[in-house]
Image (cartoon, rainbow, N blue to C red; front, side, top):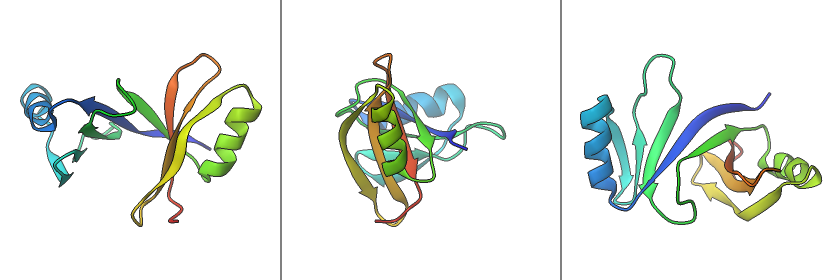
Length: 115
């Protein structure tokens, strides 16, 4: 079953956003580089997330974890959605992409299949 396991927060200034979320919510971070940081914890029952340099996606996004991004993207398209961009590998972690659902919402997909 597909689950919502991750959220993304785009930022014009990642350091400023980290300071904001750390101060307001007590979140801590693991930096990947100057443009990407993982949120360490959102609480015992929270989902994971990241803050990244604003680019393709101008607003916060939920990411759905699936068994296979290609299969899920094919189902999205077959049911009135559309792919946005390409499937992108994330080192040895997996792959992700974005799609628009039948209502025009931008949503992320992730699988743990290394390319």
